[in-house]
Length: 464
Image (cartoon, rainbow, N blue to C red; front, side, top):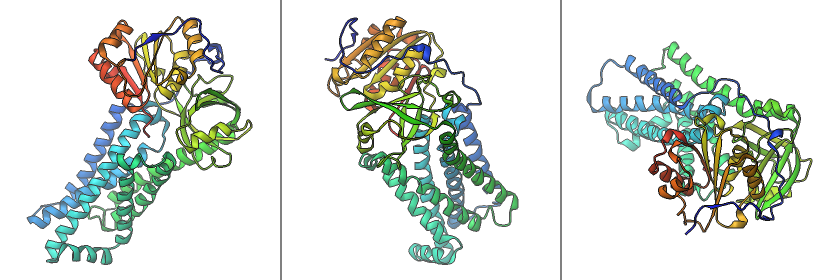
């Protein structure tokens, strides 16, 4: 069974890396407003209440089966339209959300919101068609054809519905596993097309908007506001970063089998205000790579030496990065993520890394103040990335560093009793966890069983 082993003080690791002293990585003092998860969810909930109030204000009575069905369709249609705008806003890469709520949590909210949108839209379509079929005395199928052909903006609404159903299908976990990140990412751009097509349908046929200028104005403000966020933060801000900082590849270094580090330099990098634990979306302007932007965490604190990321060859894109040449221009978006020192509220900190999940934790291991312990899990000893760097940092800081190796599934180290023995006073630590989903779940379950409060467990997932 795998176990946690303290690192040997004198050992040749064979890893061709260079330790970057902490003097070159000054602490970043974040500025600007950051949004917290609780208030953000409360604001979304208040918006939903306001949307339902639109229906309530415009409805004097609900009578008969047809009335109940058509009004159910109105409510679900309004909520689907509102949820669509929220869905897009969550992934507009607004810094206040990215740095306060965190990309990982926003991604989970986005996935859940997508299911709500598809469910509400489906309920809207079925209940409205059924209700009108009762009113007109037609078969449901005939009524559906009549509505598509004769109602304004219905062709656009039908196209939006089909697009959303298709996006929902490819986002299902079973289908998601079969798609590359790049394909999944590009398919999600059709969400914007669906939102555009559905917007006209809502204003043209929604009883709440017909003849009500105030309601129309509110809906325009909602959608145009979200569109402005997307245009600025997803299109214009990255171009501004590219022109201002002139990022280029400085060096590519082998770290372990199938793992490389890429050093990126540029101008005025301190203005990025990047923090250890954050990530950028990187687009390397080289043949076969320029069209894809992939998220990679900083694997060292940003400083005078530039920005460093570390990538494991898990697909065509990541495998191709090993062939990058120094001088290659880089188009980056960020920094993103809330997996930073801001989450720490206790003097003692435990970092748990699995596989290439060591990348953001290696940066935090060097930069976080306080008493640190790092537990690093890998399948084989040869897969331990940054081994010499980690041992140098641990020796310089007097930190506790332990390794555990073993085949996938042998997660004996993630047992409450084992963790409590390896990390004295475990329940009084802040804990950062980063690694494959299965390992992360096992570690969090063990930490909770050991008495670590949920609010002191911070984790980041690779499942975008």
